[in-house]
Each structure stands twice: as structure tokens, then as C-alpha cells.
Image (cartoon, rainbow, N blue to C red; front, top):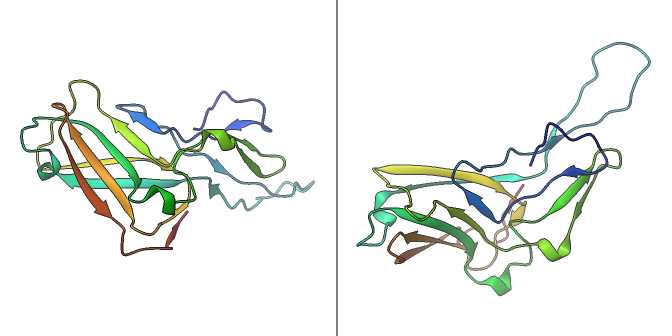
Amino acid sequence: PYDPSATDLSALNADIPSVVGVGNVPSPLYVASNVSSSVVAPIKLNFQRMTCTLNLKFGDDVLPSESTALKSVLVRPAQSENFTGGLAYEAVYDLYAGTLNIDPQSVKKEIMFDFGESGVAIDGYMDIYCEAAPFTVPEGGFEIVFTGVDGNSTTVTVMDGEVSKSYE
């Protein structure tokens, strides 16, 4: 969500989109602050990331049997009612106050990678990544739904053995 043209440091865009398109992977927002000094000397800054990165690596065997290309990948909690957090949201970060202001109406429990109508062919393995809100693994873990251009899908459950583990 980093925007190099931002001039209002009290309202930096900190959105984490719920749909990520091909070539549309936003850069993460890093923030740091320290007390200013009248002495010209190096000031140590501890940068913090406001997001975590979902990095998925999978093989071509995830494609539904008749599909020739992957149209989308959806990451969602296996049991939505057990997931109290969100993976995506709209927010602004106030650098002066050090606060992240999330619009509660915008919080989404899933993130989708959209490869367009013609999809993307997988030959061997594929890596995809995007920013996500910090989260705690819910009971049941997460489902990854791989949908082919023909509309058929395959679902895989991940992280079901990591209940209550936090990712930041």
C-alpha cells in the first residue's frame, strides 16, 4: 500500500486489498519513528511492517483435472465462524500518532488472487504472494481454493495443526 506521492503523513494509505490481480501486488508499508535531536548524528530507526506476507508455493497438481490454466486462488478460514480477525481491510496509518485506523466495515476474511479470464498456466511449481493483515490461525486452519478457467475447483486445507499460532 506504500504510495511515494503521499504528502499527508497523518493519513498514509495502509489498505490490504481482498483481491489481488496479476501485476497488482501492492508494496508493504514500513514505518519508523524516533525523537528528533538537535545534534546531527545518526539516529537509529527500528522499522516495523504493518502487514505480514502470504507466500504460497504449489505444484501443477492443484489444478482441477480438466483445467489447463489457473483462474484464481482463494485463501479463507476453513470455518469462518472460528476466525475473528481479517486478512484484508481498508485503513490509514497516522505516522505522527503511530496509529493504524482500520475501517471496521471493510474487514474481509479472505484474499483472492485473480489471474484473469484466460488464467495462468502452471508448469511445475508456482509462487504467489501478497500482503495480509496479521492473523491468528483459527480452529480448522485455512482453505485454499484453486479454481481453473473451466470453473472447476480443488480445495486444500492448510495450517489446521497450527491453531492459535500468530503471524505478524
